[in-house]
Length: 121
Length: 107
Image 1 (spheres, chains in turn purple, blue):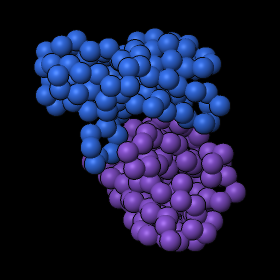
Image 2 (spheres, chains in turn green, orange):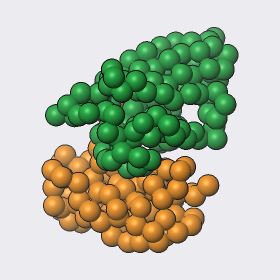
Image 3 (cartoon, chains in turn brown, red):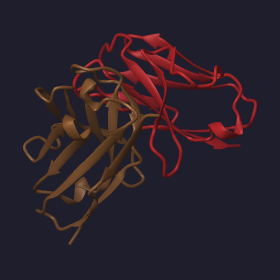
Image 4 (cartoon, helix red, strand yellow):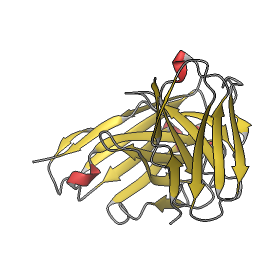
């Protein structure tokens, strides 16, 4: 059974940094592209970032470009999201998602349970 | 960026009703369109991909159609477990845009 477990969320002050992790099980993470998607409280879904299966290709939404960095450690079946220069509008539940294939595949077929990030002073 | 517009934003329906949700793209996304169901406090769940392909394990009362810029999600006979929010998403371009969501409520 495919499972994704996020961690690392919490309360951070504006301008601060946070690193999210997502550990995958039940599949070989190195064979699949991965994404982060967020959802602000009471709002809809917003794609944030994606990384290819090898980690060699990354993509970012304009709203986070230059502040967030996606990476992966395939040896540990783990996906990361380093978030710097955080703003109040980054407050959201952050979901990691597994793509349905490798390369730069875009369709997310499995989602983690989410990790809440709150940016507030 | 491609904009995705869903209608209606809220839908009130009864068990057994046939329900249709529309998703319009501001540009051609071919058939690279997915539908997700989300219940409160839970992660989204993939229902349909490539506009009309039912994800494994999803009940056959769900169906999708369309291509290009206009798409529909249909629930043939609404069940109690189907009251949720539904999102469309285009994955034709890197921006992977979601619609704003359609909440299906009990009438």
